Each structure stands twice: as structure tokens, then as C-alpha cells.
Picture 1 (cartoon, helix red, strand yellow):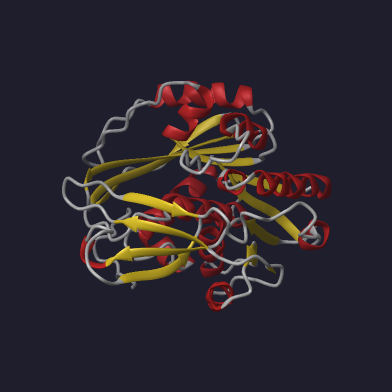
Picture 2 (cartoon, rainbow, N blue to C red):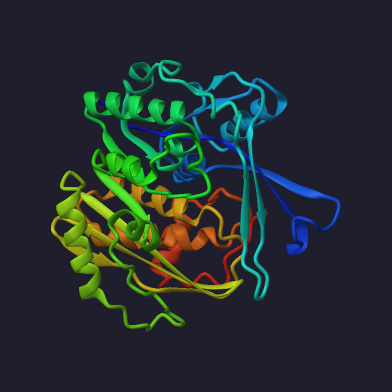
Length: 351
């Protein structure tokens, strides 16, 4: 087994309007690349990890442009395959005051949508890897893409890799005939060694009513015993999973959020601080930054669970200050925020 981390999913183009305009306003869109597993890969590369991203893209300027962008950021792209006619797209409308953000997908018929089992030589891709990272999105696009995801999980299990899974439940994506999101996600969770999700996703999976998180300030009193009981229930249902993370966000206003996370590992729960983020620049990809920070910290200090959750939370907090889907924070920048008690007010904003 090697030391590389492999992430697998769909790379997309994201389009938004400037200055918090509605998608129906103005004449110009701003575009950039993104997608959950690509976001994780970029985050890991920025922190200095050896990471490879696997997907299927069209052999077009848009598809090749996505590969070039990932390569520029240090992500390995040699196992990306090409075919099909179009790249998946999503439109993001930013929140403003009382108006919530919204996402509109245009992914049907994309190159990844038509991915089939057997197209990717997973034994070759994973032969020198240590971790395979996938999410629920990889199985939500189409039935063949779901089958290809389980093919990857089978090989990862055969080779003894750590399987990392982000629930990433997106109800608007599960539209193909015969789609069974809860059942499919549970099958994936049963294979996971480490797992991520927010309270809404865990509620969807278990039917356990989510525990409210309404922090307005960092001194909010969380109901930690209730979360511990929930974790015990989750561990009993998914006993293979060694470490489980729950992320929580309270949106006080469109640009003022609080954020925290909990980690269950080795039979006990670890909680990170509540971070006050008064000037959110872009909330997209925050969960992916959690995952990227976690996988990096897991490699650096596998037995220090408190440090793992603290570092992961610092990485996710920083992502809120960065425009676009990618977390362009280095390990040193994340450690600076973590060691400075999560004070992110003066962090540089990257465009």
C-alpha cells in the first residue's frame, strides 16, 4: 500500500452572477470549476499531500481546461478519462440579507453521467494509494455512475485501503429510474472507515431528529450528551467506521455564520470550538474543506483525535473567506488560525 490519497467524483463548471445578483439578473456570469471530490483534492494538494483526482470529462476545451486547473493547483490528473460531449454545470445564486442561496444543477447527460463500470482501471489507479475518498454525490448522478462507484469501493476494499466517505446527500440529484438514495447511501456508509456528514444528512439516514444548533456566539451551550447518544446509535449501525464527523453551521444572516464540528473516535466524542465567522465570502465547499483538513490531519497525527477535529474545523472556517469552491489554504495558514483561537477576521480574501 502506498501513501497517495485518491478522490473520485464529477468535476463541474459553476456559474454565478456578480454582486449577489439573482441568476435572472444582469448579462454576465462568472465561472469557475468545482465539485465535492475535486474540492477535497485541491484542499489536500494545497496542504502538501500527494493526491490524485479521478473523473470522466469531455475531450473539449472545457474538459481539458478543468484538468489544467487542477494540475496547476498540484492535483494529480493522470487517471482522468475522456469521453462524452459536455461537462456538468451548476448555477449558484448567492445569499443576500433575507434571501437564501440556491443551487440549480445541469448535470444530466454529462460525461460523468455516462460513466460505466469497467471504464476506469481501479486496480491500476489504486495500486499505490492509501485512501479512497468518495461521496454520496458519486452515486446520485446516474445508475451507471453509482455502479462505477461501488466498483471502486470493491477494489479499494480488496486492496486494503482506508475508505473515506462524505454522505453529501443532495435530494435534487437522485432523479434516475430506480434511484434509492437512503438505501444506496447506507450501503456506502457500511463500507466506510471514516465518515462525514452534517446533522441534516445524518437525520435523513437514521430518522433520528436532528439536534438543534442555534449558536449566535462562541459561548453557546451545546447539548453534548444528546450528540453522544446519537453517535452511539450511529456506531451501532455502522460498526466498521472508526471515525465519524458531524459538521454544524448556523446561518445568522447571509454573511454571518457560526460553525463547529464533532468527532467520534475510539469510543468517545471530541468537540471543536464554535467559530464565529462575521464576514462570509463564499460558503460553497466548506464541508469539503472539513474533509480535506481531516484527511490531512489524520495522516499527520492519527492518534490525536482532538487535534484532528480542531485542525479540520480551522480548515473549514478558512474556506468561508475564500471565493470559489476550492479551499486555497496551506497547512501553515490553517495552523495559524487554529493556534490563534480561530480568529479569522483579518484573513486575506482570495479571488
